[in-house]
Image (cartoon, rainbow, N blue to C red; front, side, top):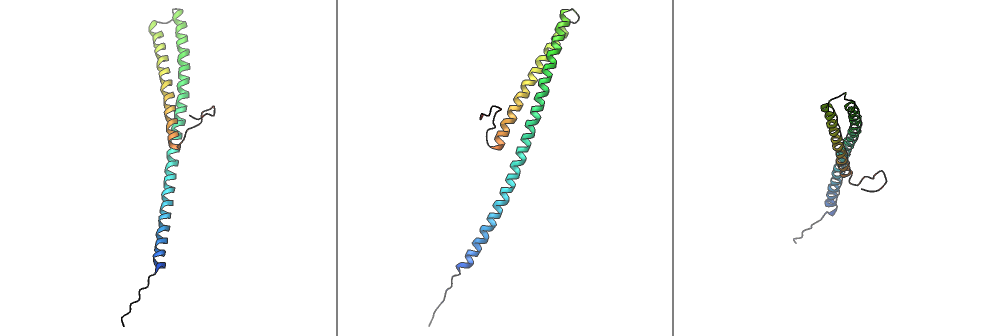
Length: 132
């Protein structure tokens, strides 16, 4: 009489699968938390760079206003023969440089806003409420 009994224990393999699935779920949660924190840091950093670019733009706008006034005064002095052509040209050059600085600052703001849109994964609304 040769008999052999084979008992399969499906419960034991199921327990292992459940444990493995739980471990994978916890690992996925940890990765999700890490990615969320990483994205949040990136968005905050880009948001700060937008703010800095906007402050810089405001300063450049003020510089253009001051350069316009300096040119106006230089033109008045030149008309009254109180200044030289060189000083008038210097005032005009300073205005051109201030305007160029403003344009560069405007570009910077636009680039930073585009980076912010990329970081948040969507378009920012304009002041009018329209989508970009």
